[in-house]
Length: 609
Image 1 (cartoon, rainbow, N blue to C red):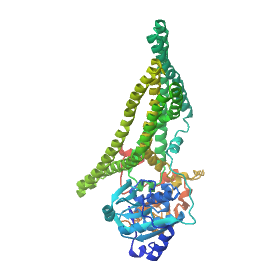
Image 2 (tube, rainbow, N blue to C red):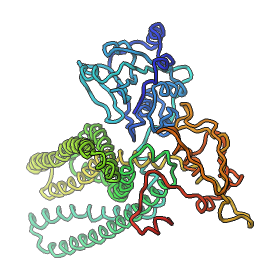
Image 3 (tube, one colour):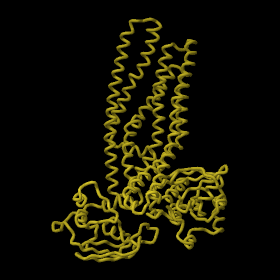
């Protein structure tokens, strides 16, 4: 949700004249070709301006977290304004200007630029190419659109940027592996045991092909029947050792998954409960509840394939070295197959990541819309809005289904590659290996042992390819989790606890004073409440009267401590609310909001909770 400007006069504060335009373009140069910007998806509808600026800054080499740009762009419950986006860009060292342009005139401006879109959104424009236009939408990712679509959606407001002398590259590019590694802290002992058991499993895995070689060359071909019994005993012992080690490894992996899932979910929910009200005002409740369940999926990834990644890499290197000792030509066939697997994964990675991120956002909005509709079912029925609500819900449902189908199409194509390459590899190994046997370069037993080793070599390669696909899908999950975990806590919860004096009462007497309070939802905009004072003595009442949006509920939230005033004080019994222990405030102050939510429990429990 965005607003390009409030009035015609406000446009003059950030839109340049044609003279300024010619100077700006002359310094940067015209750019009609397409550039590629990193994709930063918005978490909620109101932060598209901040997400678009994050893409532009990342293109120039400055990586800024989205939560920081929310503040700099003045994102509030009403969205963000183009003028605030320009101010934020200048604060980071970019020379930022706004222009009024027709779609055809965008070719004269340097890219990337930010366009005002459909009168309620911001997108990053990357340029023209081959008769189409390319945008990076914070709500949907990078895409190609026709010039007619550009003409219909572009509102004429373009924000253009270039580096200034004050611009400094910096920040850290978002790293999925770094985010996952943080969640593995404290699990070192269990991971060490799992990896050790995996290395122990290499021994029977390496011995089994040798047994096959001996059985074929010595028993079947040379007819050494006396070797059968000891060979079978050794093969049986190897199978038992493999079964025991596999059971131990999987048992510890299961325990690790349970522990990590419980720990991550508990830490996540505890952090959510300590976040300020502003965080929830811009997000769907259903989306936040959906993110709690994401922790289970991440725990499965960390305790499963990711926990054995280092082991798989070692196994691949070890088996490759052994294969080349058998036969170089056949080994090149196997390594080529593995390389093609990795290339296919890299080719599909960008599409999978973009589509999956989009699907996660739409799914969160779908759940939030459904829960919100059920919570306001009385209003829907009273106003006859069931059809409108269903149309809105069905729109999100259609987006989720379409995104899921696109993701599954890419996934199915990628999933078909390893079996195809494996079958092709087996055919080539058998064909070339048969020729090598007939030439006397290999024995029949060596060829069979080589095939067993090749299968053992390609198995971890396929697992790494599958892990790569899973990591692409879980990247969006991690972004949504970190959006919560990086959010700052409610300031009162971050202060040290105040110790009650012996003579202090457990409840307040009831004297309330608001002294010269000023507050707004965006510090880049004029305050909603300015220099407001109110005194209320114990036993008295006061009614705040005003139109919708005038700040009545905001005043009550300031008194309750849900919002912090920009300036001024809220006093209880002559003391600042910051000096009153939280326990005393909770025992003395009750709030009945206009939006009632009851817990599934007794009336007494709801009243006393």
